[in-house]
Length: 169
Image (cartoon, rainbow, N blue to C red):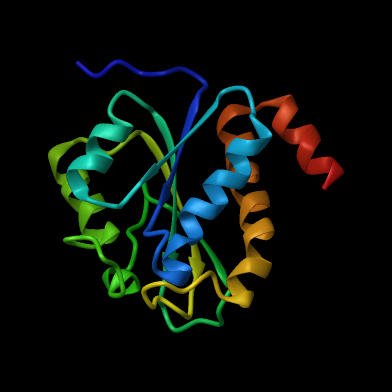
C-alpha cells in the first residue's frame, strides 16, 4: 500500500541543463526552490522513467515541469491535468531521455504508479542545442511559468502562504 504525503506537493523540474531550452523545467524548479514555500518540495530529474517513478513514489500531489516543442510560439506555457489528460507524445521529440515524458506518464498510469493529483506545466522552447543557454523567449516566460505553478500549488494545497504570494505578484 502506498503511503501518502498529506497536503504536501512535490515539484519535479525535468530536463538537461546543457541543452538550451531543455533546461526550462529545471529553471522553473530552481526559482521556486529559492523562495522556500512550506509544503512544497522541489527536486530535479533528467526525465528517465525509473527515476521519475521513484521520485514521486508516496506523493499524492505532483507537478512536473519540462520544456516542450509543440510548434507553438516560444515561451508559451501549457498546463495539463494528467489525472484527466495526456501529454501529446510529439511534444518531447527533442528530449535526451530514453523515452519522452509522455511515455513515462502513460507507463506509470498503466502500472498504477501515477500520483493521484498530477499536473504538467510545459514551457515551449525553440533552442535545444548542446552547450546553449536558455533562449531569450524562454527566459522571459520563466517567471510567468513560476506563477502558473504556484497557482496550481495553491489550489492543491489551499495554502494561504502561497495564495498571499500570488496576490503580491
